[in-house]
Length: 273
Image 1 (cartoon, one colour):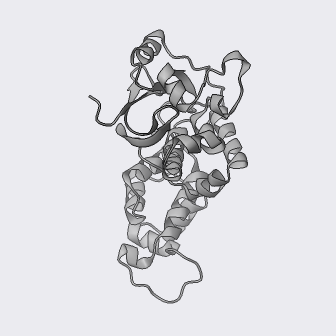
Image 2 (cartoon, one colour):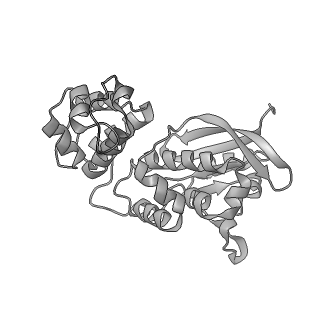
């Protein structure tokens, strides 16, 4: 594998997970009184069967190249979820086809075929999000439920914010729409972190993360925890429709085959065929 990872972020992830665990969580004796919370580095090294020096280098973000077997051992030692293990590998090796030299990505456009599909799914709210989670296409039902992303007639308001993550964390309207705002916001941030790790050199994503940490106290609190959430293919959400009131929706998430950064999300009320 070509190395295109982020050693600093990898080290921060390892440290954050180490500090969350107690010796008894991993089958070790409590030992003597500890000055700080969490496992010691030597305990993680012991569990993963690596040297303390090597593990310390990883946590310090040095340019070492761990094997996948070492990363698997560390993920197991630190009780990482499958999503966290995948994130660890991305930080170590970089995403396949990662951009190089900080080249600016091309502007994103939805193909006519995908846009046509979105419109044909009316009256079910359906949208397409891009690599930085901007809304690239949406039907009328989605605009009615979530807001007018088109910004028609020069409208600029929190309801016309095109970036889903920024809308979620900086818009009072998002808190009206999501009846369980905090767990949904945490999960969205965890999914966005996984998606963003696939594009470590995209300046727009880097700028978005900086802006989110500046503008949202929740992102400032939650982002350093390195929490990630698996990107599932379906689920349910409790949302407040502006006309229908509280509605529980099921949703399905699909990737566009020839552009996996483009994701179609469609909603339907639970119980409808």
